[in-house]
Image 1: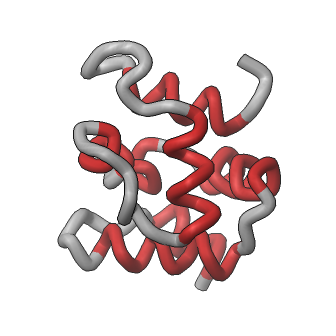
Image 2: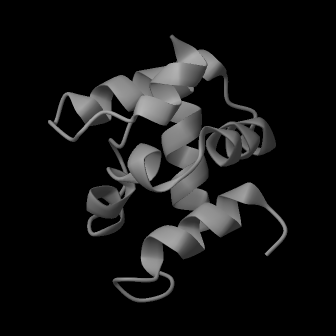
Length: 95
């Protein structure tokens, strides 16, 4: 479990059953800046990405998959528009 993407997927899946969120789900969301195209229940669980993970882990995973900070911010804005609670830690880093 060396990659941030794997660690995030594992962390998010633990309460629901291992393997529900895959490393690829994490990378797809970060790379495309959206949860569109990700199947449920992984999509629903990924909505807690920013409240359940540190900005450092998220940015490391974004780097691993070749995403940009702009796409990650777009994903964040999509998630808080659903509405899910904002992440003060993420906003501290990006605002």
